[in-house]
Length: 422
Ligand SMILES: [Zn+2]
Image (cartoon, rainbow, N blue to C red; front, side, top):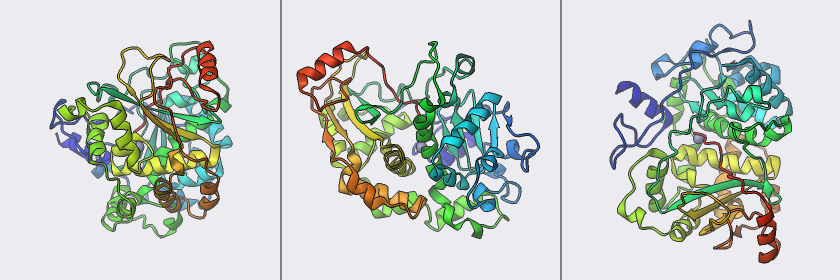
């Protein structure tokens, strides 16, 4: 009981208990067993304490910052080599690939690592997460494999939330696109497909931007020289929170989300609460329209205020760094996915809405001050309403309806679903 409630507090899950699924009992995330991880770089400055500081499950176990400082307490602009000294893995290839990724990553991402203490990549991590006891980020190795040998070591287990909301009459979909095409794809772990490094850069950047947004939420990179190392990471976080210094607290003051219907759906979809009668009778179209009327960028924004904050940053940064547009859409529930599933409600590029952008800009300016976000805003294409009744496979709406249908029919169905993250 104690153990679980600590985890719940750490992850800011709104509704944790140790009980089962039910109207008053959420389902919580359980930390994976990380006993097999080891420092990727041997004999580095912190290799002896890295594992004992990252593999913890209570606030009481949080390491003193004098024992394991945040990267930014030591380096103002960390290099790939300096970040690699904080990496723990379950398999060597994961460290090698992470290093190759960092060599290709935009400099903004390297800066964001200042707010972390360690990076853990392990074969049994799903979903990826940030832990407020350690200040480390824990990444799903799915994002990093290139060949079949590596792929074989990645867990095939599904996300603990995959059955949440199964009795709702609709499903929520998102996809990241560049110029009407998938920004990345997720090859099956059961196939023989291999992929080059360039294929993983954007999907990996997405998960890393998201988890680093959590790390940068209460500890922002510009004030790190003032942090005392005579405290644990967890104490630092709690004092930042008491002082109202976290981005999620400031975002909630600046522009809170307002939809009670969606906050309640968020409890079902992301925390495992049972569906209410009202939710079960809600039409897919009306669920979408209600979402569209509020200022969230993604459905997952209704998980917690911290997730809302991380999503706001992630979506803006993916647009800025990679020109990625996010589609959010709602389809009726189905048993077999196919291109015959029709969109009930959907929007592309909600970031361009002034009240939505204001929130993303507010958070991003806090996490990475000095970016030219006005120019980005002016360059955004207007939000596009995905036509009701269009095929859930259609991505390019610039052609006539019949031409789009023809293209779609010649294309094999691709079951696109994001790899879940926390
Ligand atoms: Zn998150």
